[in-house]
Image (cartoon, rainbow, N blue to C red):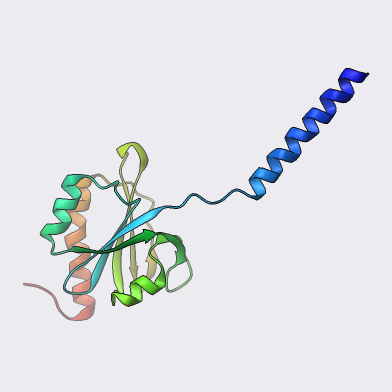
Length: 155
């Protein structure tokens, strides 16, 4: 009887301790790295430091320069339909960025998830996991769509 009482109390202690630690658990912070081009389009990568050298070099060829980094926050798109991690709204406004591409680098280099943020369509988050070669083909196309919307297509 004594042993079962002890086991029950020990089990209850573990259960309460588990719930307490879960209640006080702090969400792990994810850092972002924000790039901006002369047209005020943005490219946001998270987690910071996860991009390959090849991806960073490619970003540079598109005239993007690093402008900010910090803790990512969960935000909705303009239409409040989708949500993902990105830079705080204050950072977006400070740099005058209205349209941007989000690249989430997956763990173990399994690929990249892409999001598109702009006013007309809100936040688009396709479920496809892309490889770097696909990203290198599609980022210029997305930038051209932004330019078409803004009436400033490059020739």
